[in-house]
Image 1 (cartoon, rainbow, N blue to C red):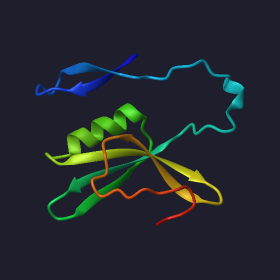
Image 2 (image 1 turned 90 degrees about the horizontal axis):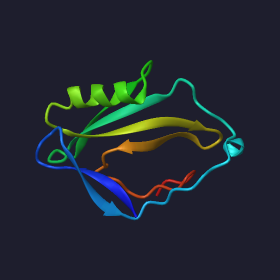
Image 3 (image 1 turned 90 degrees about the vertical axis):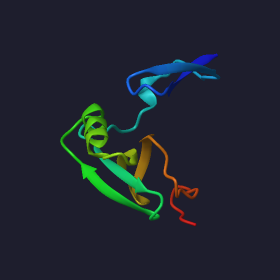
Length: 112
């Protein structure tokens, strides 16, 4: 059993909720590539209008990208992604935080 952290009403507090967490050792030699200078995208959602405002961030780490998104949200919800280019499939996003309120399931290499 692991712990999942959720926000309570206070903006600087988190509480733990027990959920199954799968943790296992890994062999780092199975890694085929690594990105030393990642890029991020922040999508700010306007659910009522059915739209989003998208930004790409470079030259920062994930903590700086998250702080920028929090500072820029202006009361909107947002999703933070890591940008990954995988050939020949092209550009993809890995969700790091938040949810896409308009998401449809995408399969690598195929759009619905």
